Length: 431
Image (cartoon, rainbow, N blue to C red; front, side, top):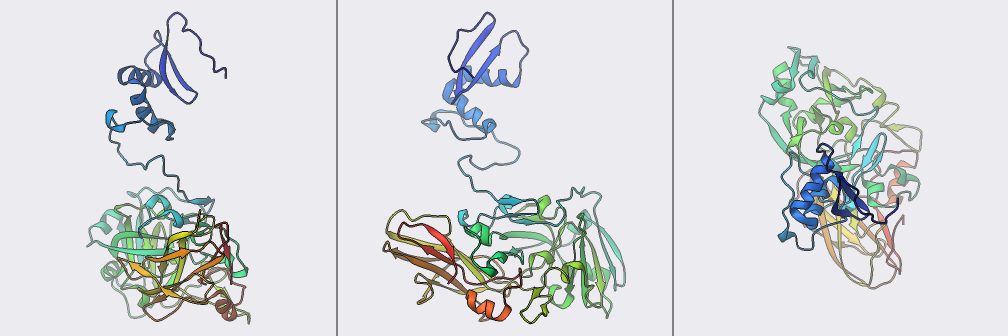
């Protein structure tokens, strides 16, 4: 496009607004349009004000006023948006997306950045038509609407969810580059819903009911069997996340949440709970989500996500610009309970220091840790290891492989190592 200016022709009026090479021109004889409206705003408020008005529509932060106190801001919107200066995003593939752990603060993952994993796409479900069936070994089979479930006493809990395949490619050597690529299939939210025990009490359990089959409304009809004695007290039937209704990719309008269990058991788009006397042995607990051991046997129903941690700053893909003070930061979690302690090494595991834990420290929840460190400009290998309230300590890669081999893809929780070279570049290694 020719960037040279030209004089307006008869009946044409040129606007003074521009953003880079973006120019607005209107014809006075044409009926008002959205473009004409924006041009009119320019003439009324001036170029700087127009930049502010245009920013939300242009979707970038290329033009901002020198003094924002002298220019009217944009009006309120029906649903908030983040600053265009913030660029963190999920790494997305057709069936999954990963949380940018290295970019976040605190323990709550923004709903829009919570990881997602699904097996045949995200279904579109009208909550007015959705139903939850409770049947099987119960005294009274029941069918609930979403509104009926919301009439039960609500409860909220802050817990992490982690895909059992999180870090799975690391079994056979360092594969991922960043914390997001390696560990991004875990996120923490405040979940709100009704207790599973409350709903099942309405149906009335019979003595033979020891397991529960949960089924989703997605095209894969995702199903998992769960031991009732382990999930009854803690599990929630959730309809909200971080104060908002569930997002479609998180199971809208209803999902099961089992704190501490592998993510695939937290069935999304929940439509059915069947009480049974034994596991149903679905595809997702036979050919999938089992751990093949070196002797050919398989670990099955390994529900708990064991203690794990990752340093997020400095981490893979980042660079320390010069020697000096660094606050090492990271996340730790355990599906078996509260994080009791986090230790950090800067010499590849030869020595360890106790890290500080940032409040709140909640059971089955991401916990922030930090450690003061002075980088001397030489090669270093940073590691962290989590110890939970049961006394379990996060293993090294060698310790984990010596017991479980390398045939599995699930439940990898070995210590993560980041190498810092003399240029300050951080990369993924295994030691």
